[in-house]
Length: 343
Image (cartoon, rainbow, N blue to C red; front, side, top):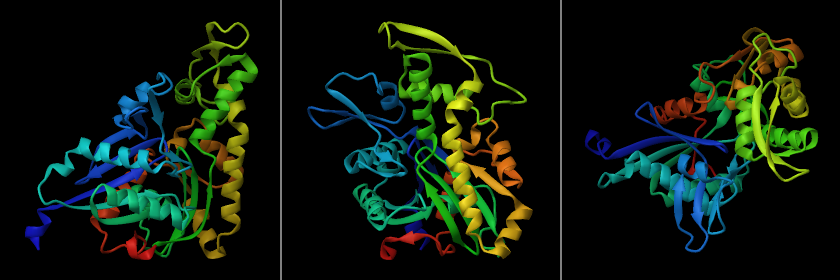
């Protein structure tokens, strides 16, 4: 048996709307944006990940950049396969002769059977011999070190790029969950619309993302406010490039509606939680993971709304992929992994 283990290549993939992370032998070896650059004439993939991101919104007519995942699920099959293949090639995993590839891939909890099949098909195309799927909240719970097999309720809020996953986990299963398509991408779109409405300035997705990272906030009043941020864009009145300076209060105002949707989903999930688990959650609090957890003041705002303690994971961006890696190592033990036969 050990002889065959030598040929087995095991990788865990967190296939995210914004970033894809790959873990092998307990180490994160790939952390790249989920984007592909394609030559329109030949259909060839020119670049994936960071290189493709540098081309995003700066291409001419012969090159297009595609984000294969929308709202946490595969929207463009061919581009998704190119992305997975390109990233796996970066790892050097496929160079081994006779290798038997085993994968665990992360999926949103609100995914349909058809969307699950699409993930399996994409994995088959990159020669995966054994593929398992794991729901994001479950992976996030494992990644932050919770014991998911215990009869204790824990609530995970995973705010990614495409979806916000809210789930109550106990006894290796998801008891109740809410999956909404308001997350990082929606926040970015809100910032772009706000700049257009309020300042008559047109900015791209990448600039809006930078604004979110530098001065993004969920609260109008912060204890340690970030410095004002200079934004370059195109003036809608004159058509000439110009620069303006914005404050974190403005961004908090622009994100307010979307954050309220996330809060409503959390309250809805709490309403459907069985009473015994609700009493556990009162003691353990809520756990925030995903890129959205890095938004300044979000934990305080959710804590104020729910009157419950809110904990942010140590590395919120990596919690899901770490959990996927743990599931990969113990795939024989965890009953919540979905394999080909379950779909």
